[in-house]
Length: 473
Image (spheres, rainbow, N blue to C red):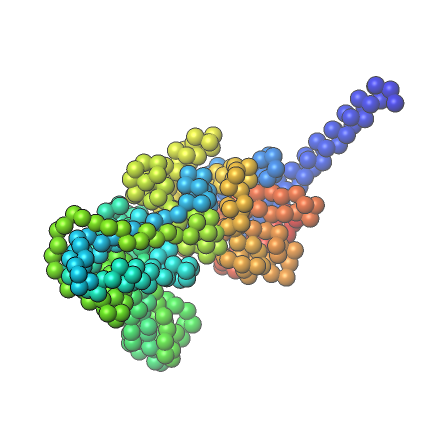
């Protein structure tokens, strides 16, 4: 073959590749154009971007740089930042130490102190292995021969100050999904109300309360209803011990559970600790000791960050995401707060060449309606993480269509099963998706869609998005 013929063949090959990519891009853009023109979205604001995971090339878009409320897809940004800043092997710590001295009779002439450093997994139902915290403390005390604590049980929560974000709505902050980070978090910072209901229209009764703060006062106005859904809401924040429960639960239930947010989880932990110690023969006398002498009893560690991130995205756990936000703030700004955490996240991604001017963050979980991000920013971060040493930890945390997490029932009995992994987000008037779609030819594309103020049903919207993904295959 002549040199000219060789060059001609190479030129033809490259031309075919370019034409193929152009046709693919045009086809995907046409699919997006058809999606946004659906009558179901006439009142909606929308941002969409589809890009190639390997190259980052944008294949299709619609208002992809418009900042919109993302709901829980915001957890992608929080967890990605946590993996990069803290590392996948990072572990939260909780220190337990004793002050004073132990006399010859086994009396601790001092206090037992629990000092928290923001571990969200203590006593968590998501990490059963971390339910052994109290039993570990008891075992350590017995090993030291301590038969009585003459001082007090003390919670040291000085690591940072816990507050409720000013942009969370009143309807959210008293309920379990509105639990906020504390230096000492325990049992997912939730308590459970057990209701008994009768026929519709009648007032319900609270039969018992699990993991309740001792000083919590609850006023019940929940009614029985023919609506077969949990429509009960708990109102009240961390500035008061009063809680009002209103709304409805299904009729004729003997044990209907409604979960609320605990505002002082350290008190619940100390209460549980005291019960276990005294039941095990170590009474607490509660005398005042001011000695500065201290001895470490045990340092308790959380599971590695990669495991926490996996649960955060699989189960969309607001509390875990916001704990990560606070720890990012501590790491980067020496301050655990909503502002420090959100500032640190924006600055981190700005330093990686990702424009964060359109990134409006008020928490780490996506619960605030004031949060706003763009589909383009989501795609950029997903592309960046695909090249990161934390790629496996991050992408393994995404729910898989038809298999697990928040996508367990999505795309079932379709080609999307196992081929779409993504974080979803939903709240009133908001639906979002961001993740990776593996096409029939094996290529992987990044798909981010944020829709605000839609008027169709959530089921119809989900079906429309499912159809778009199937067409993209």
